[in-house]
Length: 131
Image (cartoon, rainbow, N blue to C red; front, side):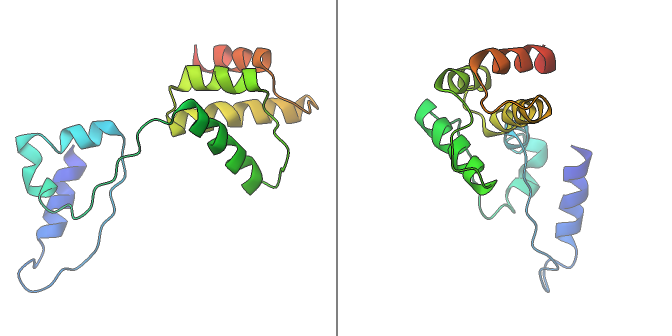
């Protein structure tokens, strides 16, 4: 939160004559909640645009994973339906968690010459990495 105070001071610099910079602040829900506190009303008032990415539904999670695989150059679905269900159940549809779980599973699969990621592999990776 000290950083928010510093940012406020930077944004105040010569505010009357010109705007010295544009600023993009990206954070998790804790940042959104912090900006609601009275101590941060000054900086919250300078925010021009707010965007919140809510958790994905299961179908959106399927599309999200497929889209990332396509960007990576894979046209086939590497995750089984049960693996995607395990990913969704653990992540709650939060993109950051989906990315971490999928990355760990993909690294493990590549290291072990696996062509598909199933529910057991996903569950094992979740247990090993997030327990």
